[in-house]
Amino acid sequence: MAIAGLYRRLLPSPPAIEFASSEGKQLFTEAIQSGTMENFYRLISNFQTQSEMTYCGLASLSMVLNALAIDPGRKWKGPWRWFDESMLDYCEPLEEVRARGISFRKLVGLAQCAGAEVQAFRTNQSSIRDFRKYVLRCSTSDDCHLISSYYRGALKQTGAGHYSPIGGYHAGKDMALILDVARFKYPPHWVPLTLLWDAMDRVVDGTTGQRRGFMLISRPHKEPGLLCTLA
Amino acid sequence: MAIAGLYRRLLPSPPAIEFASSEGKQLFTEAIQSGTMENFYRLISNFQTQSEMTYCGLASLSMVLNALAIDPGRKWKGPWRWFDESMLDYCEPLEEVRARGISFRKLVGLAQCAGAEVQAFRTNQSSIRDFRKYVLRCSTSDDCHLISSYYRGALKQTGAGHYSPIGGYHAGKDMALILDVARFKYPPHWVPLTLLWDAMDRVVDGTTGQRRGFMLISRPHKEPGLLCTLA
Image (cartoon, rainbow over all chains, first blue to last red; front, side, top):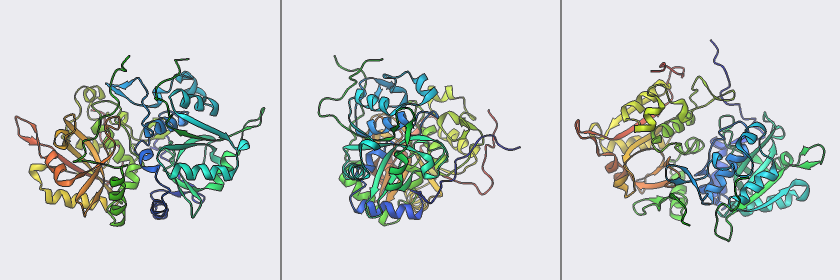
């Protein structure tokens, strides 16, 4: 009897290079030596799987908030305060996110309400040059992390819109490490930055012509904490 | 008003060295160069937080089974087959584990039922020399992973018995990387292997004198799949 369902997908490679492959390890060690994996340590320490098919945005943000050691200001389980997707319910009810996913604008709002500082860019308000500059900035420190909103098809992957954090950068090869939160589907992988830009530079809303993009998230200068009340 | 609950614990250091600290990064890059971080890539790609206070065993095993690409043979969410703590319910009801945690013997059973090959050792049936040999073996390949059952007090940490996988080894310094699944409490950290042995070499059952220990988990030679039915 055939087993129902799917066990992962084969990562289309090229264009991607699997993190745990020989080539991926080589890129990783070179990038460490170049000082462009500084954000990797805290981010990978909080790597998580999106717990629902539409929670890629919430899982990406939860990872980043934990990596930045931002205190959610309320309890998660037992006595512990900790970010998990279930804690990111104060801008939009989780039922809504479960049904439709979360918009770029609302994800930015969630990050701000959680007490993070956010700089958000749609591709039409930015350039690949700026994107590369921000990827480089975040990969050379551990005080900011970048979440990309991209179209999987541009990477030959199945699926449509997706969010995931960027775990590091290889400047020599101009490749970024995507820590794909849909870990049941694809493992972490390196992709050419130009292709990732192309995957972000896609219309997300036919009416407004609005595009995908990326957001830089960092610790605020002020005391972090939950700034917004439940909507 | 004071916020209720706890936001992490300060990692007692020494004896531990935080993975994301300068010293931790230094150990990491040296260990990569020595070829004793080969298991790290797939294991860290599946690093997860224990979702209940008593699920350290289930979270550790789930990480390892996903890292070994063992197919659970049944669906998790949507169409996807994937291990999560909630999938490890076929030897002991999750309610039991939630109430009391899981014993070493039952965790071994769960791993076997999931289709993995398991070699389990209590410290009184093994030696630190053998332990080091197994840590070295697993850290130089990505086809086996080691879960340690240890007493946190020996590492000056709060809490009692705990399970976590070993993410790599630094032979020169004789230190092991603990990927602590209680990520809301402690980040990943390096500890002296001799101290980890001491933390495992503790009586877990006063009546039988049974001790803690470790288990090596690898892919079976036979076709993996769920071998046991729900108990």
